[in-house]
Length: 266
Ligand SMILES: O=C(O)CCC(=O)C(=O)O
Image (cartoon, rainbow, N blue to C red; front, side):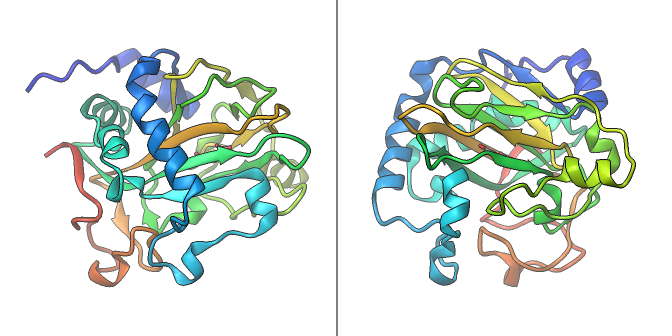
């Protein structure tokens, strides 16, 4: 099957250089209508944050002021699965990460509440939270709403993935920031680049790229959906796995498991 993937060699070069890339019109807004309905259902029902995790994987109230999150919607909602398994999206991730194939780590709805309570998503890297080595895993962040700096669009620091994996930054703690930490160590950190885009736009970012999202100053929640891809050259390092497969995988081994299905390549 031919997959019409927009990712060119120049895109791969730019992603490797900067640690992120933006596709402003990856999906049409109509392609996301069913996903949005599934996300709304998951977020307004009793659906756990992380299914099977102790206490449903509930995050602190402070954390939920930055993000209301539901992990692995693909296991419950065919409408979410259609996007999580979307061949063009997965093929873009495969090409950008220089992999022969990519597997799913997990998907997640990322809903930033609006209004006074809304908080920024602190500057952080994703990789310290992922049981993976070497680095190379990446996220596709899909704008389900139009996003800008008024309602919680993402920002990235160019080239920051080159710092490699650093410390985990708590998202529920005011002022915690990997940028502040690095500057305190005398490191030069580039200026951030904001990523406003219309619904249907997608950014990909490397697991070590510093990223942030503004608080949502509007009175409506900001809806986004992210899919995280594991390149074939990345091993499971042991420890916890939000998909619930940790006990059935070998530390140091591959991510081959039905809960981490192959999404592109072979
Ligand atoms: O949606 C957000 O506010 C942050 C998302 C994020 O940090 C991520 O997708 O890695």
